[in-house]
Length: 471
Image 1 (spheres, rainbow, N blue to C red):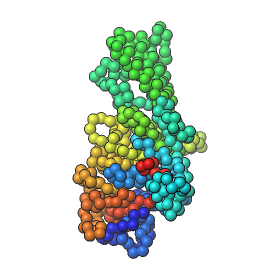
Image 2: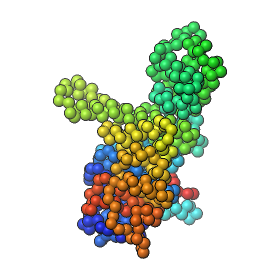
Image 3: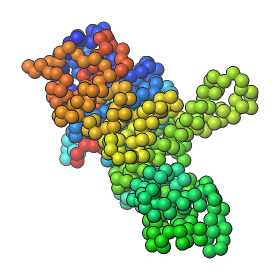
Image 4: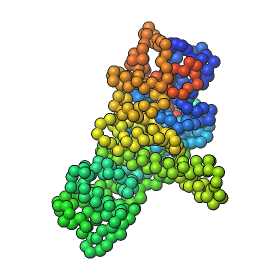
C-alpha cells in the first residue's frame, strides 16, 4: 500500500471500517480492491468492489500508472473463491479475459519467495507486499488459450490450451476483416456471400456431384463451394481463385474449425479464461473479440431465459421444469467479460464488429447476467455509448486534457469539496495528474459511504504474479 495520504473534505464517515463500491452488498459477493488513501481517524478502511449484481466497470490510466495491475487485482478477486482474503464469491461467475498484451496468464501463479539475490528486485518487492498482506500462497483457477495451432510457441507452458472459432458463427463484418474484402462492392466479397449461402442453405454442385447444405461447415467446405459449378461463369476465375486461396490460408492458421471451442470449456464459474491475443494481427484480434463476446451474449441469453421461466412461470409441469433445469445446468453461467487495451477495439469511427457487440453488451448484458470490465490508457478514445454505461470508474494517473475530460464527463458520484496533497490544493485535473502509481480516483454510482462522493484508493498488493513487470 502507498503510505502517503490525501486530505479530502468532507471526510468519509469516521466509523466506516469498510467502503463498498458498486451495486449490491460486498457481504454477499465482492472483491478486495485496496484501502482508502485518505486521512482518517485510525486505520484506513478497506475498499471492496461488490460483485453480487451485474455491472460495467472501467479502469483507466496512462502507461505505468498501475492500470494493468489493478485489472489483475479485479481478475484475482473474481476468481478468488468464496472465502479468501481477497474475495467473497458465494455465487462465482465465469471470467473471460481478452488480453491483447499476453500479460495475464501469470495470474495462474501465486507470488512466491525468491532466494537468489540476483533475481528481479521488482519480483522480490511484490512477494514482500503479498506476504505482509497474507496473500502469498493463494492459488486461482486460471486457464490460458492460444488462438490457433499456428500461434503456439515452443516456449509456451504445457497447460496452455488451443482456442478455435466456429466458422458458422462468423458475421459478414468479421469475414471482411479476416479476408480484407468488401462484401458489397467487391466481386470477391460478393462471391464469399454467395458461397456461404451455397454451403449453409441451398447446397451446390461440384464436378457433377451434389453437395447438401450443412450448418456445421468449415473453411475447406467453403473453399470447395467457391469453385463449385454454381459460381462458375458468375464471377471471374481470378476472383474465385484469389478468394479460395485466402480461405485456405485462413484455415492454415488453425484458428477456425467447424464447431470451435465449446463455450462450456471457456466459461466455467470461478475460472479466469485468458485469451492470448498478442500473437494475432489486429484484424484477427478484433474478430476473436467480436465472435467470443457475441457467442457468450447469445448463449447466456438462452440460459437466462430458462432461469427466468423456472423462477417466474407458474404454469410449468414437471417435464417442462426438468427440461429447463437441464438447459440451465448445461448453459452458460453468469459471466464477466474483461477487455484490456479497450481503445484498440472500442474507438468511435468506421464500423467495427467488436465495438458494436460491446455496445450491446454494456447496454443489455446486465439483464441476462453479463458484466463487463474495460481497461484503457485512453478513455477519450472509447465510444461514448460505452462510457455512458460505466457504473464504477477507476482512474489512475492521466496527464492529457482529453483523457481527463473523459473522466470528468463520466463521473458517477459527486466530487469532494477539496483535495490536498502535501502543500498542493488540487482540483480533479490536478489530482489525476498527481496520482502515484497504484493509487486511483474512484467514482461509483453506488457506494455505502456518507457522504456519497468519489474516493481515493491505494490498490492492494497482488496475490498472483503480475505479468506486466519489467524483467
